[in-house]
Image 1: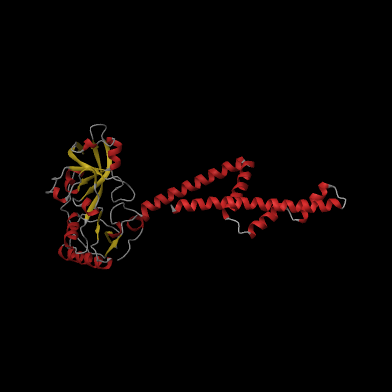
Image 2 (image 1 turned 120 degrees about the vertical axis):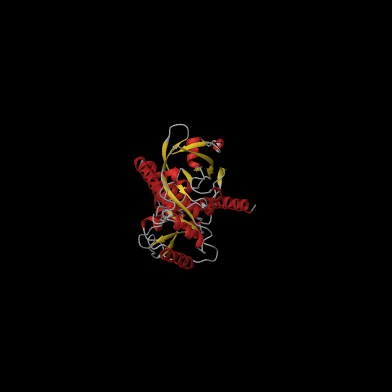
Length: 353
């Protein structure tokens, strides 16, 4: 109701303002005619008398504007006059109009693309719940977040700062869905990956740590929403279907929710596979090789009330333990916490705790 009343008030004001302008114009013309009558009585011809009368009043448009400003004219009327003037100019120069419109279109389009990239990669890199408390663990020596699987497990189980730690790695495998096998990029992830990030399935279900029971014990695959849409046309019956991953049978458990693009900033994975099935997925297994830092990243949410400084001290104590316990396989360097972002993880140094 208030909005309607405000609208009515503005309309009424506009009409009153138009009526006032008309009255001022009429009054001004009356004064000019009276002055022209006086001049005509002195012997001047009527056209000359009217010309001199207008000169004496300084021009009808200028006097009208002065009267308008003195009466506190509304800004909308000034804007309307400016728009009318601009349209008259554009009509006189259609070529200029086309160039101006195209220039604006290209400029706006370029700005939109740049902002979209900036927003996706730096300002809001991961579309996951509670992204503000999500951190990865880096070494300061090489700005690397890679960890061997055994050392990742030590960090996951020994730390007191993270709710949980998930791991993932980039992989390239041959996918055979029954028609036109292709090589596709995806992620090999720890069983707790989806639970740590708090993401939900679009259809079916996601795999969990409880699905893992040792090497090659979880022959499951979760498709990205984009891959499901492009290769299966959003067919919900894909859940339970068996496809070939590097010639090994894997069952489609479900599809990741729309908008979830994994935890890489420069590429969106087409599928997610359990890390414990590395031998089938990649043709070899180094899950027990402590000195082989093959995992791409480990990340997790800090517990409520834990600061970055406290978490950094916590993981550095674990690093010192690993160096003391496994001196041949691990040399401890200072560890820092970094937010998962394009700048922090891949192009520059991570933020120190």
